[in-house]
Amino acid sequence: MIEREFEQRLRGYVRSEVAAAGAVPAELRESVWAIPDAVVPAGAGVFRTRRGIVLLAAAAMLLALLVGGAIAVGSGLIPWPASDEELNVPGGVPWVDQPATRTEAGTYYLDLPGRAHIDTPPSVRVTFELPGGWERVRVDNLIWGNEKWLNFGVADNLYVDPCRSGLGVRRPPVGPTAADMAAALTGVPGWRVTAISDVTVDGFSGKRVELVGPADSSSCTGRESRLLHVTQAPYYVPALRDNEPVTLWILNVESTRLVIRAGHETWAASSRVSQLQDVVDSVQIQPLLPASDGDG
Amino acid sequence: MAGDQIVEAGIPTTRDAAFRQLADRHLEASYRLACAILGSPAEARDATHDAFVQAWRKWSTLRDPARFEHWFDRILVNTCRNRLKRSARWRTRDLSDDLAPAKGDPLGQALDRDVLNAAMARLSPDHRLVVTLRFYRDLTVEEIARQLGIRAGTVHSRLHYAMKRLHAALDESDAKGTLR
Image (cartoon, rainbow over all chains, first blue to last red):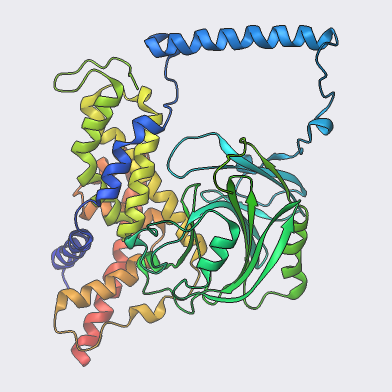
């Protein structure tokens, strides 16, 4: 085959793939349109807009209140916790700051957003202890060990079909509790739930769900089966291996539904798999937003 | 949200209105480029959204709205590259079965698709990127180098390697087709 013919075939292939993708999905157009209302731009000059000036004035008032409060505390009028221990703030270093190389043993934490695609304050902090040698997969904050892995997420919904992610997420969404999610998981196409039980992690109750992933995701969109829709980029938790054995700890953390996902190679040694439970046992959970009255 | 003042003919003067107009103007082309790079509409949708979020966050670095397309393409391509790298990390299954073309398919184009899908999936993210920019966007080597922020020689090398792999895959398929 001559070079020119080869290039024509290649060009034809690339363009036909793009044509087959179709038009821009309406949900993408809507979500991009909503970005200015939902995301705070970096470096937005506070002095350059009227709103900025108002915010600055509010910040000055807040500072005055804090200074006044400090004086009141100093004078003994208001009791104030003396240390982080009293405040019950776990220590640790941010997992997102870890390089994508093997990490040292230590205590790490992750702050998880409460809503997808929108800049909101994180809703929950998860602190965990890792032995040395685990690794961070940069894009997903996946915690990758030898033949095993886990990640944390706030699961807000499931896909209509995990193998056809282009169909989007369920409407109406899965109910807000851990029990709602556990029940919904029993009907996810391609995934097989093998056990459901009650569980408590760091004082937060929920459901422990054991599943087995699809035997073959190669014909799925993007060659992956998406189990959960979560609030942090890239917004989903897929099967990472064919027939992946997965354990989920789905927890009601005030108004947030925290999910811990652990998976491993089917051939992983039991001693290695048990390390996943050790990490989960070390987890400390700290809600970062006030509890809402509605769901839970 | 009120925005910073942007003075450019035909571009609204507030930050959010300018963003929306430019996003609307370039959304279709951006989504298609993401599809070409990632080979998956669902991945392309998420990557395009994430790239626009990045663009909004970095808006203050856009000096000239008339150069939005070039500026944004760099963000989009980087976002797609990160996704490809993640996928490559997760997918270690043997793709050799995918190289077998669809049997009984009378259309040469469909056959090419099967073969090239598998061959593209085996390319590294960086090699896949240069092929897409060369054959979807029709960029020159120098333009690809500027887009990716790398040397033209590196683009040449990656393109040469990737083309060799893809060429070999098609040749092998053609030879099998002749024997059938």
